[in-house]
Image 1 (cartoon, rainbow, N blue to C red):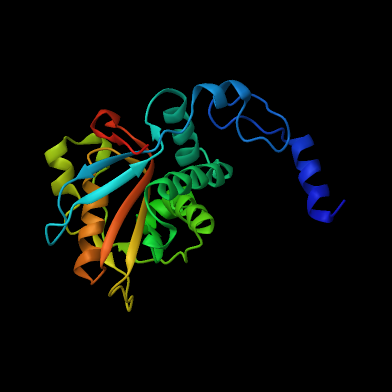
Image 2 (image 1 turned 135 degrees about the horizontal axis):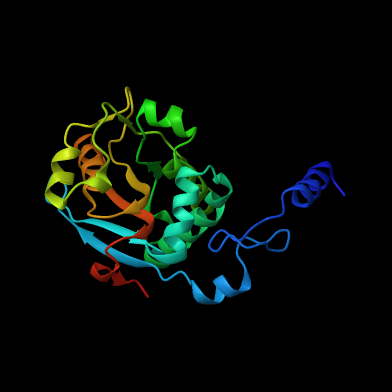
Length: 229
């Protein structure tokens, strides 16, 4: 047994793995329990969001509906330090994208950024963790393309129109980044109205990206999506 496997075994003994959906104890090496695997199947769906900077349609793929155990899981991942959920989420996003687009459809993967203050408080950007995992499965380079230039009000506290105004002027392209001709996969953890993703997509397109396709783990407005199967 290799050293890595030994440490993994010891870690599983000291901190038994738990299902990332229901949080119940599971066997070492598992990500979710049998019950959740049967009840919470990924079903990739696509939502058409508002047009981009030049009138392009912005599409967003999500494998899960944002409700119940999925919602609770994402809250633990986002606010309680469960970074170990990222590989599962990233893989499910990548699988959904593969079903809908050819692997060569994208040239770069990136994520919606956090502000410096929020990143210090949380210790990680949950969208970036997901994006990096999805990029591995899709064989894409992960590139930090955007930065959050200023703080804004938390989106989930606002109405639809307020969300649109709240993200204006918040994001900027990273210094010296070259996006001309790139086909960008932009990833977040949760999509609600799509205001944040659309604003980020608008900036990427303005900077010369040929296309931006969005993805997230879960969609709040699942009824507005189209099943990609």
